[in-house]
Image (cartoon, rainbow, N blue to C red):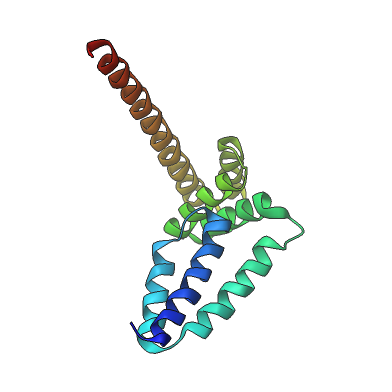
Length: 152
């Protein structure tokens, strides 16, 4: 690994940290952009873009929770399913609840019509089902541990 590769890796990781702070994870599209930036020497563009994005999201007078909910609603209105999913999870990471996401989807029904509403509810259902599956897995894991302890 060259010194420039190491510098790129450190700078890229700093960008990833910004996304982790805001969204709780690094979206796949961001990883794709970072790979492209590495391959073509365009990391400064990503750094400026991420700094602007951080300024608008993190330093917003709306606060992180509301800002993520606004993003979710705008993306529903644009029909951008995957980014809407990312910002729905970001809203939850920032303290929103399922009822907040439903409210945004309902607002999208009024402002953007049935397709935006349907997409929003689809995303909320996915999140709720994923959470229920995680809870079931945790219960099963605890039951297995309990059975293991009784057998041993």
